Image (cartoon, rainbow, N blue to C red; front, side, top):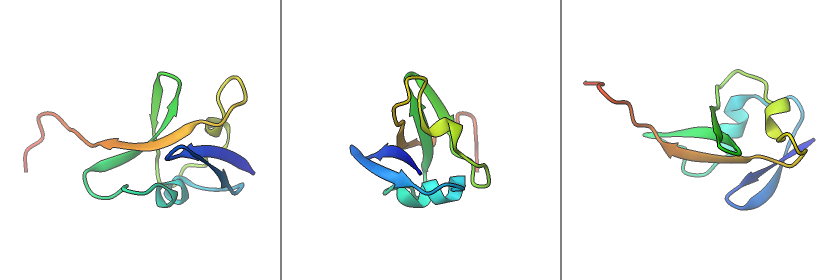
Length: 78
């Protein structure tokens, strides 16, 4: 079982968790926000059907931070 940091708290993530499971664990992940994994200065978008195991620890073996950021798409029009 891996551990990640969500809202400053360590949360255990069951083995075999998909991206959609990670998204459900993060509060305020609604419309207009995207869930990302922060690994140092790198930001990785969480995809619904991808398995996340290696991405949940950094190169030093510490848990990564999972958070939301605003979804800002330049040049898009509705």
